[in-house]
Image (cartoon, rainbow over all chains, first blue to last red; front, top):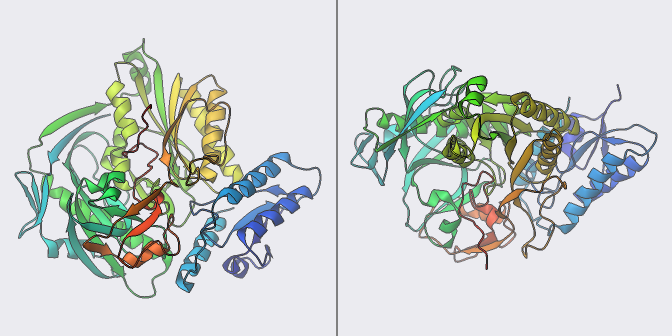
Amino acid sequence: MVVHVLITNNTAVVAKYPMHTRFIKGSVSDVFCAVRDEIHKGATLISHPLSGSIKPNESPYKSIAIAPTTGPLEYKSLCTIEDAISTLARLPDRQRSYSESVLEDFRIIDLDLISHIK
Amino acid sequence: MRLEIGEILIKDVQFGEATAVKNGTLYVNQAELAVIAGQDDRIKSVEVFLARPGESVRILPVKDVIEPRVKVEGSGNIFPGFIADVETVGSGRTHVLKGAAVVTTGKIVGFQEGIIDMSGPGADYTPFSKTQNVVVKVEPVDGINQHDHEYVVRMAGFRAAVYLGEAGREAKPDNVTTYETKPILEQAAQYPGLPKVAYVYMLQTQGLLHNTFYYGVNVAEIVPTFMYPTEIMDSAIVSGNCVSACDKNPTYIHANNPVIMDLYAEHGKTINFMGCIITNENVTLADKERSSNMTAKLTGFLGVDAVIISEEGFGNPDADLVMNCNKIEAQGIKTVLITDEYAGQDGGSQSLADSTPLGNAVVTAGNANEVVELPAMDTVIGYPEVAHVIAGGWEGSLRADGSIEAEIQVIIGATNELGYGYLTAKAV
């Protein structure tokens, strides 16, 4: 079985799964692009990039699970991540100067959602 | 399964010495309700307020809305798996305080929960501006974690609703309606000349603050299953979903699911309503594939001609909706989809994050990005400052004079995807 890799900009996810993360110092858009690049190298998507009802233009954090396989391009994964990039691009920037407690809530929710992956 | 719903019409709510219903008024013992709602060591304080239609009152942030109900005949009790044991519900007789609602408020997390305005333009967007609201504000102990916080506020609301529902036990209902769905073979035989229709009821189930429960079980952990529609009327399905105020399904709306009510209204006239399939909306693509496969399999197993599919939320649930549509249509079963839209403030952008050519019969509950201005209210119950951070607001949404400019996604139920709202379309 291939061990999943979590591509994330969420430090709470890195703290809980230090052996299974690739940390992206950047925005949700940067995470999406990093996932897209991995898919072009043969990885497949495990979690949906638009997971959660918190819109990607509102939460500063996103974690996406991929199977770091190599091989031919998996077209379905590519379509899904490209659709997510396009969805994010058309949403207005709604990130605000959140307080640390709000940021902590965003990190915990993102961590909880990704923790449900078996 | 056969259930009688007896509605006791509530036209006013007042504080009183004893909790009771008299001549259409719900009297609430404020102190007793606060004690019962607060029966958890993790709760520091509970305050109870009243908010009536037409008053200059804003409730913010709203976690859940719950309708007081009481089981007077038949097995089980309201909120199975939470307040009651897990005995099967949905048969016998249930009394409803129709027109009353428990609204829970409190800072569950630093964002997301929505607004109810009892008057003004915002009141036109939420069904809960028309209910006599008993608002329960819950303050947990310091240091509580996010999971426990959500749980204790959710349970406080259920306890409050059960306590108020008891006031309807001995009351004579103003009207009684009977709903019945028979076992599958009998149901199919009852109206052999009518098209058989089922309802695929998608439930938000992605994790913390995104959960829905069936008999106490997190629906994320089930595979899709059959349900008698009357089970929802005894609150077998409850909300733990705090996210996306406009299109989450509060517990109240689950119990009054208008899709089920409308299917029953046509049952035996134009359709044969065969029952519900409940399914989830999970995080991984494999879970989505599995659940949509199972859902499609069950529709074929039921032998229905058509299904209604309702979604909860936006974004990745659009993928679940599309998968359900494609796989059910592939079996030759017609689908009608209910969703809402995030089409930008001008309504010009693509509405959903996924689509399919087989989704050729779709009902929209409205565009959640539409901007609305909410004037200041005389009274705010809750925490007005969260308007800056809730979904659909932005920096500066809350103005110095107390008014708010935001997208209608901040308003509870504004684009509810079960259709429990006021937005509609008119031909011009």
